[in-house]
Length: 254
Ligand code: 9D3
Figure 1: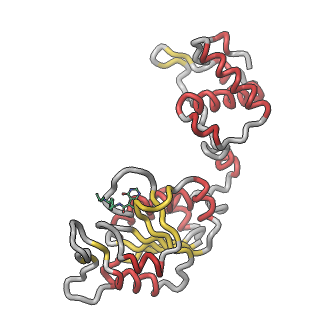
Figure 2: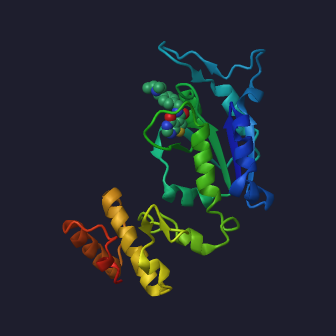
Figure 3: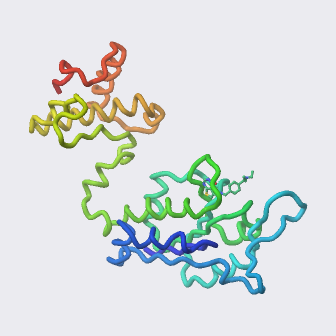
């Protein structure tokens, strides 16, 4: 996969693209990622990328010509995505979809947005990362890159860690524990020390359902629950109704 990023702040991407999973993915050539400094595609002395809005009003608008030239010089721009608060909200399904694409170009919005003609002529799709106000599309572009690159087959070689991910089943994750066995006077749930992998899997399934019910009940709208999961969910609902939290010893028969 190849990803091109058009931005007025290419320096923001330097450590992001060098470190961690993304850095390793690039070293392995699982992905090629290049940034393009929008100012390099200006022709005036002041390298102006923005201008006043026609009709007046506050704020500035990204001029069409530099963005146009930046996209046109990319040999294979592929799918052109504009990061903007007006876009559809990026989610894990969209990350999977984009991870299947050979060429992806991300345009980072700034100021009040881009000239409408650029949007109409050049942009295939507009994405937001959520309903909060940021200063531009750079952080959103990093969010998209990170979510997409980690799904590339050469990157997360271990199928289990993708399959085991939160949101893979559309549910939240179960709680995690590590050493020591007792911390702050609180012990690790006994079932996790039992070595009984069947019981441990069942406990984790149940706790995923409990966490989802408590924190994100909206996720059940989309989730496809197996008969076992439906049964575990009913148990969890009864426990909650009875004021139990699943941490009771009597609850530790799975
Ligand atoms: C305060 C300015 N707002 C006027 C009503 C509109 C506005 C314009 C540009 C708000 C934010 C921005 C800059 N943000 C992005 O370019 C952006 C963004 C975001 O702010 N939130 C979530 N996703 C994204 S993707 C791009």
